[in-house]
Amino acid sequence: MLRFKIKRIFVLLLLFLLLAACASKDPWLQETGRAAGVPSDQNQPFGRYIEESRKNIEEILAARRFPNGKSPYLGGYSAAQAAKMRAPFEILSEQGDTCQNGGLGKGKGFLLIHGLTDSPYLMRSIAASLHKAYPCGVIRAVLLPGHGTVAGDSLKMKHEDWMAITDYGVRSFEKMESISDLYLVGFSTGTALAIRQLQDGSKSTKIKGLILLSTAVKAKDRAAFLSPYLRWVKDWLSTFEERDAARYESFSVNAGAEFYLLTRDIIKSRYTVEVPVLMAVSADDETIDAAAARQFFCNRTTSQRRSLIWYASRHGEKNIDPPCSDIKEIQLGPVDRDFRGTGYRFANYAHTALSMSPADPHYGVGGHYHNCKSYEEKSDTEDFDNCQKGSAMTIFGEKDIASKEAKKELNYDYWRRGTFNPDYPRLERAIVCFADENCDLKKALDDR
Image (cartoon, rainbow, N blue to C red; front, top):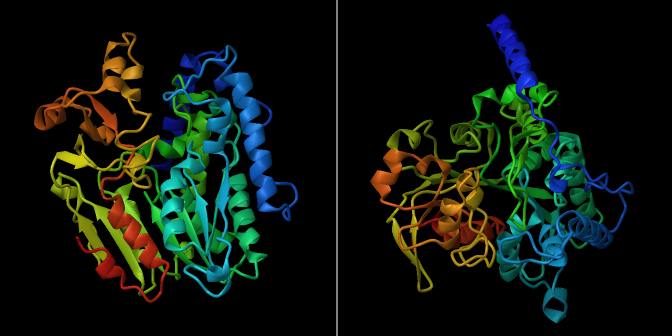
């Protein structure tokens, strides 16, 4: 078996070596030499880290994406606006007597960790929900090194640096005497970083729980183990025009390789999580292995205070293995829906959608950004343009609905990969409740 795998690797490497294209001339697909990194001074104030990161991102975007002054982004964002979306951020405790005397959230801290090719913007809905519920708490979001600037900076990023910036974020709370309870809130790759922080990061007794959305303990692609070898001869798995102001759309081989290296041992027993855990996973997730995430919850989380929100698939076989307690299964519900008077159609929960509110001005129901990347790859732009415009028949969902069978079953004209969570109010209730040890988590998850 091992000999077969090795032979397979070398055959594929030879094939890609013969087929690999020359380096792209697109400026956003080239390294800048100024990729986001880890502060050299571990004691650097978080506010300074935010400002330096934002300024660096804005300067790079202005030079690489706005050479003629025209915005390349859907929504027409400026370089300054995109930089603010992509930069790390913090929401400090509200001032006044209420918080001084023990108001809601006093003593609580939340470290938000985004996913692969994403930015802290993917955590903005969660941050807003936490601040509304806990105005006296402190919320911080880090920027993973290699992210935030242009996709070319993902070509050399390392997962060790992602772990280092997570540790920097945790240490920033360690220095705050006012914070006693720290919660790590991860999305996708950020969930793996949160899990590994408990075992491999600086030890912190302040960490009281993990909130893990689109939990990434294993890639869905079974060939992911090849990515560390493939990056020797190939830079990109997919490239796009980079129309999203909040995140990268192109995906480098190196990004996949570093994700694989980060997660390859995470389902082993040494990463058993003893603190309370709240997870949310879509059974139809096309990026991470949802079954592996569910197994991790069942076998590697030991606290009595735990819950997994399982967004069910319309394919029943994805929903039943393996069973264990503390799982709240959410059925898909109707295709035709309404959000604050705006109708839309919904097929299933996408990996990219769970952390975002339908009200978000960029990714929400009426947001500026429409994920139509599957149509961008065609030489004819008509389908991409029609997908952007949308119609009463356009539908949101995960990549698995992009088939003739699904199109016939769901009766749509164009599909957009989901960028918001229709069940966000329940998720919000659960997250807020989870951070309150006196709150009944199971009751918070019930339908209302």
